Length: 262
Image 1 (cartoon, one colour):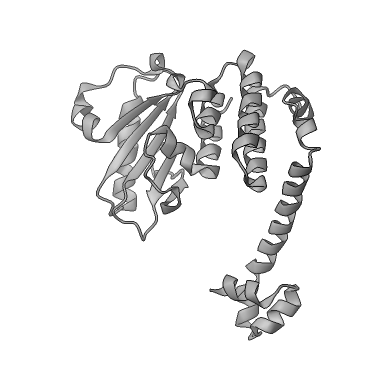
Image 2 (tube, one colour; image 1 turned 30 degrees about the horizontal axis):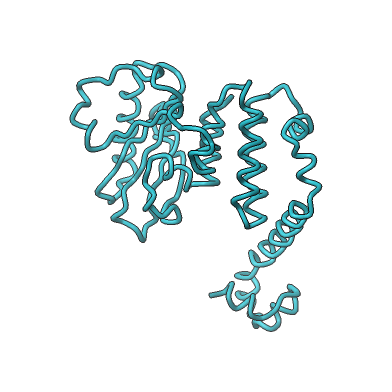
């Protein structure tokens, strides 16, 4: 399974899962942008960076690396990439943390003594094998653990997560999004199975026939239509159309147009 890719998707779609994992529950994910920046003129690419938006210059930068195999040069590359990032992007944020995420403790190699000065103030290490049972953790941590769950237990664990999502998430659109993401992780873990077989294995074919799921699907389609309409607002304004004219053209109420323009 391409763990780098799936973790990029997790942190891109659900940045709050990252802050739950590192125990930074007071952080506001909406203050950050998650990217996977390329370090020019080198062979380095950071798995992910949570960089604060410009209006939050005092917030810390979090560099995240996913490491699921033994590598004696991991910390050399990690810290080198971070300092090259500083050189090329020149962030003004005063604090930064290097977040190393391992599948299990045995994967980590000995920490190089030459980086000892960076270890205490900046390095934070997390081992996914330490995440407990689903009953003891949040939905987000459970989804992260699913990535490293062995295939024999992954199906049952995914079903538990789907049940937890249906119980805890009252927003039907978010519930649908989370359930589909759990399904995507299982697809990564069982590449030889079709999407239909995965849905049957997780009982998702039954779930997708429920009224709540169908309503969420319909709401998602309507939201997509609205977003598409609002995307062309700037062009209509540039052409000199009034709010009333735009509302009639797009078949929307004037209040929706006014709020979007604000």
